[in-house]
Image 1 (cartoon, rainbow, N blue to C red):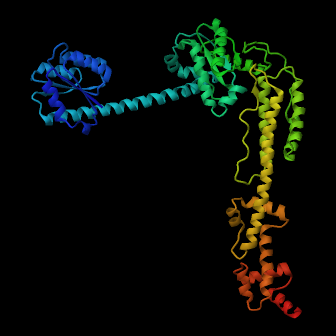
Image 2: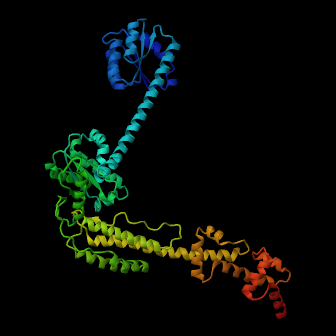
Image 3: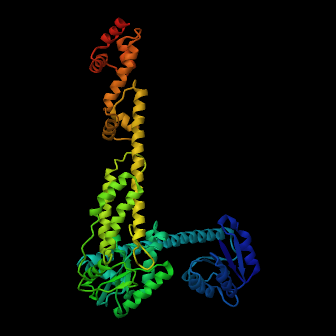
Length: 536
């Protein structure tokens, strides 16, 4: 913190300097000026937080300096020091932001109290400024998210705009707008370069893209670009102003995106519509255009709205090929997976065009197949199953989809499931084998299905089912068999009573032990021991 002492008398400046332990107040720099003009130069360059000023000085006096500080350095805290007990001086000091008015000769106690109040006031004001800046940063960070939600509803729900019209008109200056045009900037599929840079941080990509779009749109009355809350719909441009120049603006926008992101994007346009009554219809038209966008790489990045849609081709359905893919995944054989995908890719290659609508439908089918595989994955281990790939389709730089690259992406995705299945089977076998080994060595303890399942982090149902599948015997039956086999060994030693043998193999109830022993051997423990004696 810095202090500036302004007085034309050197001894006054010295006395103020010597009367205060400045370090106690967190003050590290003490500056001096002999008149108001010199003080102004120091205030501009050094920006002191606390200023002591005399009232009567050459060049610029104290009142003139306080007036100047009020405009040029309003955050600073000012204390007047004067030899005149003049009500006019006092009034003007307070009027221009002075905190205190000290009379010469200066009393140390009064000086310290005035300084303490000034430092406290400055720190409180600084904290308020910090909180205001933090609040403004938070508002600026959340405001785009808020507009994303509001404008998504405005273009998707009939009549919603009217409920927020006043707010939007105030924010974007749309009170006099009578016409608009909706455009979708397609962000799915993404160009390969974008996936490599922003695959793990798509929010940053959307932030950059909407900023670039809004920079090109210019003034608020020309529209606003926002991220639709449904990720399938990417970025939406609600364009106003000079719509005749919109195609040129979109082309400029795409070139700006290319310069910054090294990738171009498809724009799907609706027709011009009456604002705000027809914005939902305008968005529906943009969506209709988007569905027909073909990823052919022919350089037609901006697609206008065409009222008469082209006749639909026969749909290629992934479900017709998914069974062979699932079988290949369970085989764990990469070559079989590649062969299954080759058949699928050949069917796609016979289409005249691959459209945005095709990709959306195939994504839905792929997710169904993927989830079906995960359901068949009888998962019981600690490692989570492989997540659905973030992007199933990638665009080349020219805007086309490469079938070989697509096949490679899907091969890797399906191989991840195949490897998870293999690991799952290994974990299942290891876990069930560990349960068996545990029973073999801990049969003397009280064992229940729930306790064993909890120990190995398995569900009761899963443990019971898998143990039976692996060993062709229920776990409870296996526990009884192990106990009885060990009881047979102990019964050979006639020093142990039958009750003691029962307890040694995990039975607290001798009669229940005899019942289980008879069930598994066809004789009572006593008969079994007698047979050993008679036979031996």
